[in-house]
Length: 256
Image (cartoon, rainbow, N blue to C red; front, side, top):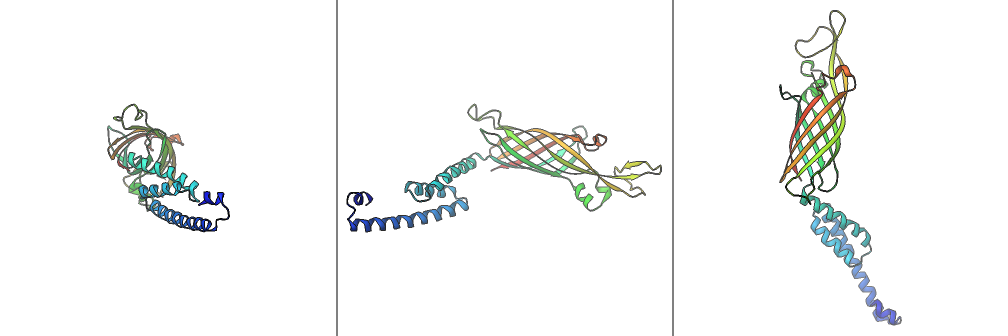
């Protein structure tokens, strides 16, 4: 209709038909945009992609926005297909000769990409930390809570072989440990290490720790197995032994 009008600007009948077509297309674009937005918010990405491509093809007013959205949806669909995200439950032991589960409550979540570096975040604690909050002294020895974060990468890319779904990760963080101190008969300050409670008043002392960690993650279909070695550097060197300088964290999780 627009081409006809460009040749004959006095053709009022064609002009009316063009205006009606514009209104109809505008209504259709709004309907498609509303549906595409609804499908996108409900994570129905294939339907949202189909409608977004229709909006771009028909040259709707929001064409530029949906061009960007199409790229974003393609990335989400690709991530779902490759299950980049990993959530794992973990526990930490201080050594192998005399295994002791120091950190039985630990979680980690991260994005493990095929071609680029990804990130992760971990949180860990133990029941002694909650007993410390309750002032249950005999069960609050080695109270521990901490976070760590870092980067990961795939050393053997999929273009080399698909049979090495292995990622390495490096990171650091912060750990807070609690210890109770008291004064013995001689007036010397001692650290309470469990057992019978002393007669003197206990005083809570915070120990600040900087962990440095490195590890490996392996994906087996939708299951992930994760191991992290952590060296925990006590800011006060006199507390280095108490904070368990070496930690081995083992985890199992799901890929999604």
